[in-house]
Length: 220
Image (tube, rainbow, N blue to C red; front, side, top):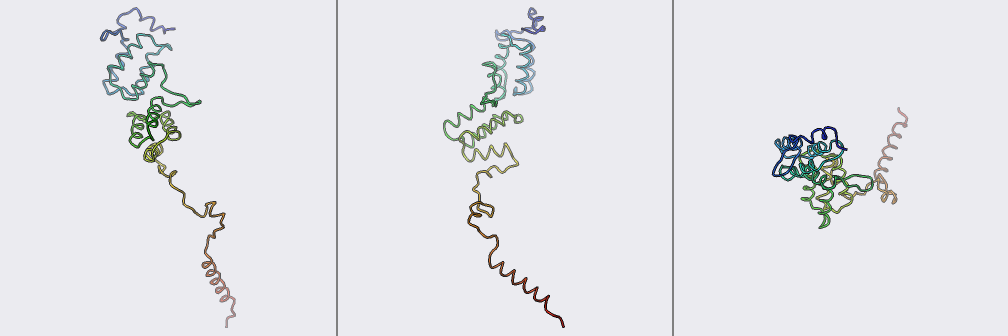
């Protein structure tokens, strides 16, 4: 059911604006133009425009045509455009695996790279830029990149790059370095390797006995 504000304005032609033969929602179109006047429409602004069109829990054909015109004629960031195009197609920006939501566009791009060969370092840079899109990294995008690292083939350079970006506090190649055998290694412990050398122990015992002998000798 349409909102009361929509019903009240439906018969008023000032509510609409015709652009290139397309009947548009005036307020929605002008809102998009205001955003675009300050730079490409990003993901957050695209979401706001979609919510504005969807007041009353539904989107009318006029509003859908308005957003279609906006996507075609105004400048978007890649992430903002992907969101809007996906919403206009089927209303889903996300894809779900199990009960977890991931960024559909980001995951599809990674799967395309991985299908051809292992994801290269340059392709990892492309994925990172798509995830950021000029804005901070969102939880969904971070989760998607971690899924990519865990489930898709990627070169060592690509893994190092993404790991460093996702968690700068951790050395990106720590998990890939071979572990050196140490005293705590099960393999070393199983051989019963001594912690101290026999020569050092004998020298220490000799010194200790000498000190004890000197202190116990009778004094004149």
